[in-house]
Image (cartoon, rainbow, N blue to C red; front, side, top):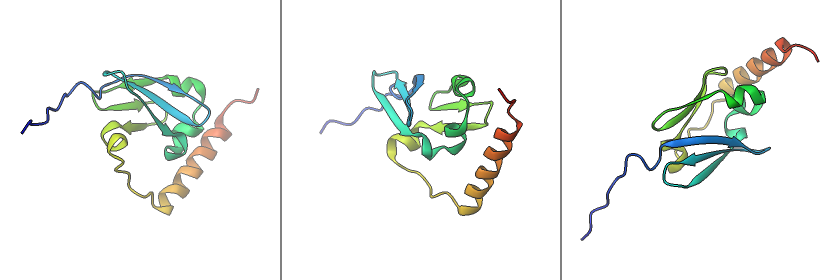
Length: 105
């Protein structure tokens, strides 16, 4: 029997791009995986500048400006916890406050 081999670097994020509805993450092994932005309300509400200001970790992507991240292990395995309604209400309030603080154009 052949034992599976885990390649630690395969899942390392290399770059993030966005569509209107998804964050697309390029991985070290050439895969491109996408996650709906509505899974991450703070990222969905972020400005283009905030979305482009990310840091790549070995197994995550972190956006300092909005203090949010995508955990690639959870993303690849589908292990997402249901968001409590209290937390959703907190996120809606936080997003509204951030939008209110944006300078008018």
